[in-house]
Structures are given as C-alpha cells and as structure tokens.
Image 1: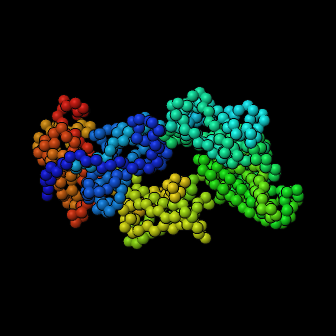
Image 2: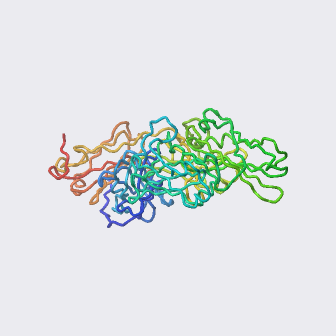
Image 3: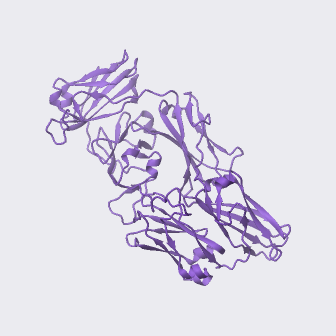
Length: 599
C-alpha cells in the first residue's frame, strides 16, 4: 500500500538562533564570528538546541548542517512527546567540529525549508602556551616578570599606590580574545588580550585595592593562567605559570603565619598523592604577646583550583590559653578537587577586649596531584556501565553532594542519548539545599522519560550553576543502557546511486530501494521525500532478511535537480515508533556539475 503526498513546500521562515551550550563568545569587536568552539566541545558530547513551536510537528525531519549545505552532520525526527518541550536537542558530532571554521552551522526543517539563523563559528584546539614538557614547577611557556624594585624591596602600602605592573611575555598560540587570570596572592585580576595589547611584552596592572586585599606575606605568590580565545585551558599537566614570590607588607600584619607539615618546606608543595587521602593539618602558635584567653581565633584555608575557582575552608576556635598550638583540620574531601591548584593559609584574631581584629601574615602552597572530576551520578548499581530493566514505574538517580556547593546552587541532572540519528535528553534542576545526612541528592526519573531512552546507549551526569548562571562545574559521565540493545535501523540502499547522486535515466522504470534487515512481524513504511513530489510506502515484514521496494519513476524524475531524503520507520497502529538513518540523494543527470559517475 502506498500513499502519495502532494507538494506542501513553504517559503523559508527563520526559526531563530540555535542554542549552543558551552559556546565561547566572540571577542569584543570581532566581526564575522558568532562564537567559538574549542577542546571542551569535543572532549564531552556537544548538543545544540532548536526552539520548538508551530513549525515542529510529529514526523518532521530536522537536519543540522555544518560546512556542507547538502549532507547533514546529524538529524532528529520530531516525536509526539517533543511537541510539549521547549527545545529539541540535536547532536553536533565531534568529527564535524574541525579547525578552522564551521560556516555555516544551520538547522533546517526538511519539509518546509524553514531554518535557523546561520552561525559562523571559529574552531581552534590549540592550548595557550602549548604543551609543557619541562619538569620544572609551573608552565614554562608562561613567563612573567615583576618590577625589579618589587623583587628587591617588596611591596609597601606606598608602592601599592603606584600600581604594580607585571609583564607577561608573549606565549605560543597567543590570540586576541585570550583571557589571562592573574593571582596576586589569593586575589584575582582578569585581563583580556586584544589586537592592541598583543605585543611581545603584555603588561598587566595589579590595582592598589587588589594588593591591599591580599594583605601581607613573607612570600606572597604571584602566578597566572590563560583561557584561550576558544575556551581552551593551559596544559592540564601545568595549569599555572611558575610562582614568583614577593615580600608584601602593605597592612603591617604582625601575627606569625600558620604552618603545616603537609607543605614541603623546600618546595612549598602539598602533594595529594603523598597525603593518600589523609587530611591536611594546619597549626597556629598562640604567642603570649598577642593572644589572650577568650579571644576568637578564625583560621582560613583559601584554595584556588586548576580552573581558577575559589573555595574556602574556615574554622573558629576560642583561645583557652596562650603558649599553645591550635590545630585546624582541612578534610580530604575538600582537598580532593584541588589538584593543580594553590592555597593561602592565614588567620584572624578577634580580640575579646576592645573588639579589634588582628591578622596574620599568610603562608602559600602549591597543590600537586591529579585534577579530579566530581564523581558520576549513579542509578541502581555502582558498576561503570549499568543496564536498567525497562519497568513501567519511576526510577531514581543519585548525585553525591560536594563540599564546595552552597545550598542555593542549582544542580541539574542531565540524561543524554547522543545519536546523530536522533538525540534524546532529559534534564531536571533543583537547588542543592543543605547537605543531607547521607551526602546524596535524589532525583526522580519519570517512567515516561525512562521509556524514551530504551534500547540505545546513553550517558548521565550533573552540572552545577550559581544563581547568576555561572557554571561551577560538572561531573564525570555514567554510561547507561535501558533494556536490551536495539538492532540498528540502517539507512535504505538505493540502486544505481553514485556517491549521493542518482541519475533518473538509469532508473527509467523506478528506483529499487532496499531496507536492510527490518524487524519481522512489524509494519514498516518507506519514505521517499522530495520537495516536488514524495511517497510513503507501507509494507508488512513477514520473513527475515532485507526488503526491496520499487519507488515509481515519477517520484524520481519529478525531483530532478533537487535533494531527496530516503528513510524508513517502524509503524505500530499507524504511529511511527522508530526512524532509520536517513539517506540524502541528489537527483541529477550525468554531466551535471558535481555529479559523481558510477565507478
């Protein structure tokens, strides 16, 4: 049985912008660039989103094109449940993200030609400073110089008023749009590289307020890292430049700095591997000249991780006696995420009499160790790959609560089935809340959502955002399979095709189309979908093996010099339940420009 569908082609209508998470913005004043993609866009699955509306109806084919207006990189079919969602996800495959440009990236509805606004995206995978193969501390491709007088005499309050200019030597792969993050002690200065300041020597000013906020230290650490113009970080093995050490006495802090046996006295390094999961102990000696009974001692361990994010562990203790050592424990779960970072150790002494506060000088440490991702969420087991039985009831996913989270941070569970033939996604966001007793946040997986993931490999993770929208981090991925694996639904095979071209003169009696190994005992429908004429042909599969269907020659010739999409679906009670991969054909006679001859 076949069904002829008349031409219903509409004029092109814009569908708005594609939404691309983790798209790095173009630099200010950068013309002809809508955004940038880098390493993070291929290291984990990249999905783009099309806004739904009246133009998205069940059965429609949406295709994503990158650099090639004819052959799509991915597609999705609109299912009935999708019409209730605000956005449709489409995979942007990693192999389609290649330097130097994706131009244009556009999503188009096959039936109507309606499309999103085309995007021109810059692609660059180079890391600022390149790879660091030098074993010395810090990234040796990121070289900074401090003023000579600062190195010799240190920094006083008067010198801080003059501002301190730090010189960054031009590094490998430097480009306009790079962002420098400089740490003066525990304070941060960001600096944007532009065409105007991209010189052999790049000068970065540390303002007076920043110097004063960092307070005093015998060896204040100065270091920096660079985030590239497409979002690439510096080498994961050496995120920061080597630390320069400066005597800072801008606040005249007179209390002795805290100390920790976990810090190597020669190198100033806390080695997480040597700690082997044990806590860090920091100690303060309560001297009789400044400490008195009933004073309050407040200790701070202010850490900056490999990405430049700051977290603080603090603890207060009442002074019960002087000439005593007060120990403060930094728990291993706080330290675990700080590999390739650094920390400032300091304390404040709040006087019981007089209500004044005195501050210590600060000690600094570099933290060596692997940069650890947040652990993946888990479902019914703890294996790296979980098979979930398809049951008609809600399920649960569990997210380990992290020490750096605040109750108002927003935790989003993301369940993604990344498939260039049709991506499926489920998201749910909630506040982190107070830390639960079992250290786990529970998410409900609705039965209807679970059903959408059946039969194909998927992955689950969580991401955490601040209330202002800033991404604070994301977890490792958990691989999942819902039920038993489905057989692949391969694209139809059309006879006499060369490349993606079909000459209608080679099929004067019609085109034979082969459906590879469709499921036995099911109705399948073949779609020959052209802009001028199209046909859908339904057949019942009674025996194993391939099924051959002839498409009448009329539907080939009517679409001469046009693009035709050929695919098939599994049909249950008149409703499509699954779609195959899609074959793209250009109907053209041999000798036409771009035609590939049959070998």
